[in-house]
Amino acid sequence: MLRRAVIFHAPRSEGALAFGRQVAQEFGRRGIAAAVHDAWGEPPAADLAAADLIVCVGGDGTVLRTARITIPHGTPILGVNMGRLGFLTDMSPRDFFTCIERIVAADWRIEERIMVHGEVMADGAPIHAFDGLNDIVVSRKSPGRPVYVDVHIDGARLAIFRCDGIIVATPTGSTGYSLSAGGPILAPTEHHLVLTPVSAHLALGRSLVLQPESVIEMAVTSEQGAIVSIDGQVDDPVAAGVRIVVRQSDHITRFVRFREPSSFYAELAEKLEMQLSSTMNPSA
Image (tube, rainbow, N blue to C red):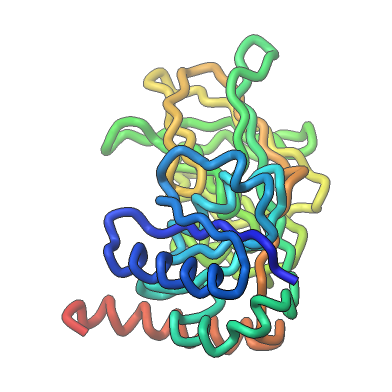
């Protein structure tokens, strides 16, 4: 039985804020304590620690942000789509109230997804650590100039890449930037990371699906340094000579689901077709 919930809404979205308040009122009528917060504000530590459920109102970017700030609690996240595609959300606002009795009763299926962990190393010591749900990307710092990245996997050199960037994506992130760069699509509950070079010159340009326990080490050799990006939302400039060590995270993201897992591929095809249609016809 649901007792406490946190409701995160997309920033600068009056519709998402209004719906979040509507959800809080509905929960309140049912004796459930609920607090509404901007997903990009200061994380409400006390509310997060006590919550049984997090309702995330917005698009995929809001879900990605929410997944990171809920570490280490592992509280289930229910995504309500008010964005365009909604790869990570489970339902529409209308669906939410259709399923309200099951939500209140905590009658749902939990889908666990791996996260990716990265550490920026200098002089053999970590200076910055981070986790993401979608991906960690090492990319060029200067427009028009490639980044040079010396990549090792499990201690063995793969290649020195002269490229626009290197993406290390989770199965969740395999439908994002990695897919745009030619990477494969993995089922969301798989436990493999995918390494995808972006516009690699004179080097292996194919994606690699890695073993669950694999460790990727990326040394930036470009004089101008590079940018390390987490989920496309947090950018960390790094200097030449640093190493970025990436592996599966010890943390997971837990999603509330009401649909069956077998619907993933059908929904994926539908969303990709929608994305293609909107690209071909921006006014649609």
